[in-house]
Length: 472
Image (cartoon, rainbow, N blue to C red):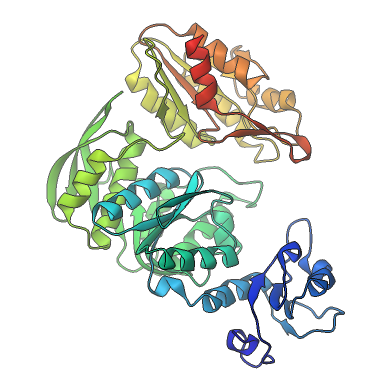
């Protein structure tokens, strides 16, 4: 492709590829000088040229002797150029985008399961893993950079995928990674405190999420109206004919009632525009019923028959690290969950309480170099809802783990246990459990490592550690 096809009026330079990392730039590549949080891509323009870059996209001209396209916003230009370069794959590939604070991963898994049940081979882009053409890949960012994203869409089409379900993070929306993506469906799960290390306020966080429905090319909006921010979205005049879902709002398009949950799953009555049905899902908890409703609404928007969708929901297995059961034949339940926000921890503990015949134990911590305001909030929630609390470490990154724990403890009025070593904390909670108890290990879910200072990441898996403790 030629540069003037991507940027009309630019020189007709032959372009072989796109790059935003100078270390990945190669011969005849178009290099985008993206401004990051710690570095400015313009500083690496000369290195990209030395590696063979044929042209640059910049927000100000730099001192190199190759063609440069000057634009107001390099990130936005990169997103639209990537879509063109890879043939605008989402004109053909049906894309479902899921955004919100909690529930994105499970909802995405469920929607993909419904698509596959309807005979539509589908890709997946998310926090736990990616799937392209039926083959799993390790996940990087929740939502990849625009060049990587559009290239992956093209690879999905080439591999026979008809659709893609993807988690859409607020960072991706704010940083224009999904500009140029055509969304057949956009789903809003909820919005609660998180990422306030990136977004200045909750309002900024909400406005970033809103972009999926007001600035992206999204055909059908599916919105949780039990959530206060969801109600704002559903009433937004820029969003035409939203489809709504809820447990509490009787006017929602998709609604569940008569919810019952146990260790084997949940049963509920689902009310849809096509009628009323009884459903049984292997996924436990009220929050997973919201995820199921969102998936059913997406299925209808995508033209999947109701009986096919209902059957797929009833077969869907558990998602790694999302209220995941660890069973070694013990007389009590052990559940691992990714809950790392105040709202998600509250939801998980409330769901676990329903399953608890004895005492409810929780092991949790808070990540370093992230929103510090949620630390005492999560401490207070844990102390209020659980009978036995152990505060521990969770990806401390550059911070002192003990200092993070101290901040969590400021939200707890009564003394609770705390143990910096996460392995010892998990072992202590399991050792304290008796028949009929429930142990919740929260915060890391599917993650396979602990992040420490200087980018050090050591292997660690909550599920594996819990199994080892159960086996003694």
